[in-house]
Structure formats: structure tokens, C-alpha cells
Image (cartoon, rainbow, N blue to C red; front, side):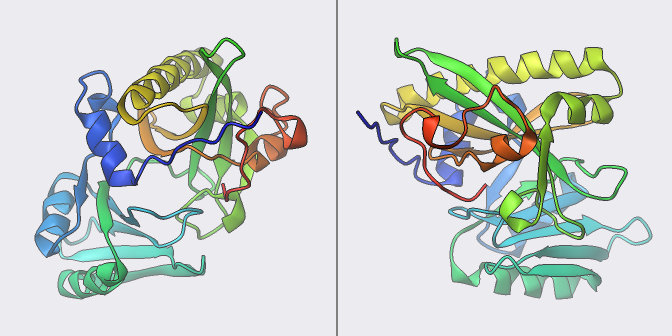
Length: 260
């Protein structure tokens, strides 16, 4: 029997749903629905790094990264990835120019303006983690596994289809947090968060069978939920070499070949 996951509408709806519960609020990056330059200004005041992303985007498409330069409050470094996945090389722009670029960027649909979490590795590449939680034969949620994703050079996203690569989460976390003990603690906290999130989203949206959560973990080990995908692909598990993650045709029902 094949079980089909229901959609979770869009990133903004999921963010609002999580934000209703005190359990999840600390794990949600500050996020606004972009409507004018005032939303961009508000986010830039509270965060030195801001991401602009489509509410229905997949595969890292249509994401713009903005970083305020230390040498001047009115100078910003921008880079990104177009809807075609083409990488936009970093360049510095003034505030007025930035406002015009973001307005043009968001003209094609609805976009979010989101607090950036520090995720740049010493290599200069960005990374995050993909966690998979699934229903077992008894209908209970189980943590299936987690893999690290490291983006391609000059990319603001870690997506594998955008040229990134996968590795074992434990290995990447140990490098990032500096010790095996801190990495283990973060893994346990992430697992608990993933299971709680799956149960809550099912209560909110109706029956689900599996979810992939894209997580950011900062240098202090704090976990943020960047995105939730109800139809995850298996490519990240295959490339990470994590035998605990289901792969290929033998994976549980509900698997979909969607870009990671």
C-alpha cells in the first residue's frame, strides 16, 4: 500500500504554525512576509545577514543572501541563486540599490525575508542538516536519521542539486561544534525536536507519513528549523554514506524524487 503525504501549503504557513507554540518559537528564525522595503529594513536592523526566499521554492532556487558590511551601514554584500539555479556572484551594493534589487527579485511572487543563521564553514562554504522522521508500522513517529549538506563553492545554499555534497551529520557537527560531546548533544536535541515537530504538524494539517526537516545549527549548538518537506528525496542519505537513512527503492512508502 502506498501512502501519499498531504502538502504543507507553503513556508510562511508552516512558520506561522510553528510560531503559535512556545515549544517551537525559539527554533524559528525571525521571518517576515515581504510586502515592501520596510520589511527588508526591519530585518536588516535586527540581523546582519538576511535571506530572501520564495514561499514555495525548492532546490535552493530563487534565494538571495544579503550581508551588511562592517565598514558601512549603507553598504551590503549580496549573492544568490536564480530560479534557474544559476549562481549570482557576490557584489557590494548601496542601500538604495539593494532595495531596488529586492523589489525586482520579489516581483514574480510571494517571498519571505528571514534572519540569517551563521552557517559558513572555515572553507567559506555554507552548510545545514537534513533530518528524516517517518511513521513506523505501528503508526508512531521515529527518527530515521540525519545527514549534513555542504554547499558548492560560491553558493548560498547547500542543496545537492545545486552542486553541494552530503556527509555524515555526526562528522560535520563535530567539526562545526568542536567536540564529539557537543555534537552528540546537538544530535539528541535535533532528534527530539524533529519528532515533536512531526507530531505537531500532523495535528495541525492532518495525517502525514514522513517529513524531512532542514535544520541550521549555530556555533553554540542552537537548532533552527529552516524548512519542512513532506515529500523528501533520498539522495542526501545515499551521498552521505549514512546507512541508517533509507535509500532507493527499498525505502518506506511515500518516497518522492524531489530535489534536495
